[in-house]
Length: 362
Image (tube, rainbow, N blue to C red; front, top):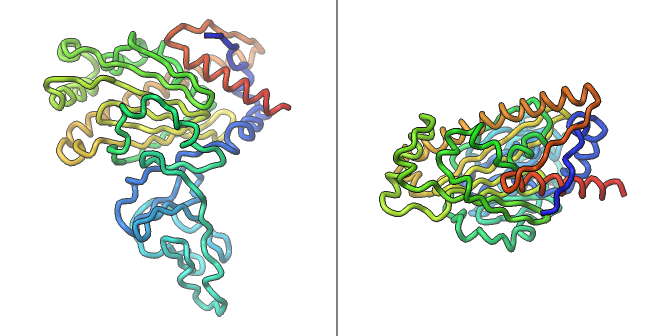
């Protein structure tokens, strides 16, 4: 693999660089906005926090819609959160809309309410995962070789975990893109997947890392963290004879969508910059329908183990940010070597970053 240079230290802190990144990476990207399984019944709605609450996912007459969360009357933000309601009502003047965005009530207004619907936004449905934006997630992932192993269509949404982070967004992507740190930072996760089995898929729009599981004898005897011990125990009970072929299939869809598939469990993270030195990470949890229906203890154990790893990742990124800040304040530029194969994804992300920033300057 052809190596590329790392991201300059200043790019993790400089306000002008941050502004260029927002234009370069986030203005026209494909945004993950949720899943079809978030909306089970007619009347269900969910404000898309990943889009700064600007849109609402609704279900009306069996159809999912993505409509504005800004009232057509005086442009107020209308609702937050999720729930079930036949109408969406703006609290300022009580203009109301149905799940299709049609305006249904305009108190004290004598005009034609049908002239003021909420606008619809286009979106894509990829194996029950929803995306919107100028790029096409479906098109860019159409040849992803591992999709048949993931059974994404059988994964059902359960909850969202949100983490506000005090470092530049690229620190988190750097951490996700490499596995050299796993044995040292993630003792629980390192006892679940076989790091030596790692393989990579390199694509202009994404990278993917694939792992196999540790063998049964190791999983049964190895002492790991209590949360991972519980997950592994319940996992082996679910698979008493034959273990799944793969232990983890992870996709880094540039610039900020991370899909992590594990047998029976999936997490989708999106890191959103909120400033040069802050970001927020929204993590959606999914489980196989059979786990939700019949094995709630396996569901809870998987989520607890994942959050343990996410907390470890956040601490690691804080250390990365702190070290890079020292170098930035001392005007020093230092880049260490890439450790193949465990940091191959880091090479790929840095190459993508440089290509996009170079294109932006033209």
